[in-house]
Length: 102
Image 1 (cartoon, rainbow, N blue to C red):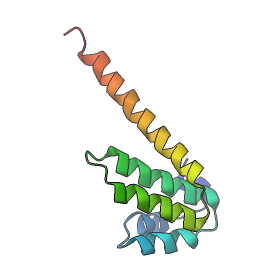
Image 2 (image 1 turned 90 degrees about the vertical axis):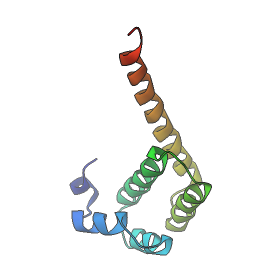
Image 3 (image 1 turned 135 degrees about the vertical axis):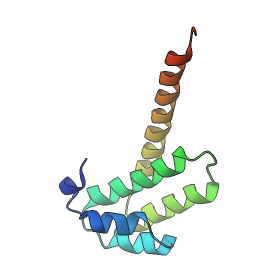
Image 4 (image 1 turned 180 degrees about the vertical axis):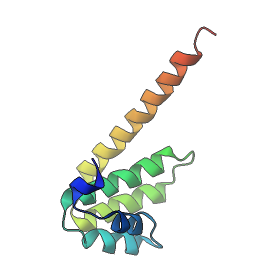
């Protein structure tokens, strides 16, 4: 998905992506009227958390809280976490294919 398809400006996306607090994220997402844009940003947040070496329970809890506040179901958030984990597994398998038999 591209930002232009989500009816969100690049400036607004950057503002939401680099907030100062959980409340700021929640408020910024609540101000978006496009559910696809809200879900896109939740997904991006999950990818950032998953890509880090040290996933904190607090980060996961915050994402669920933000999503709940803006009306994105916990089930949908869970689906995004599963999707992100599969992506990491896929990447690891790709690295193993390159490295095996050397």
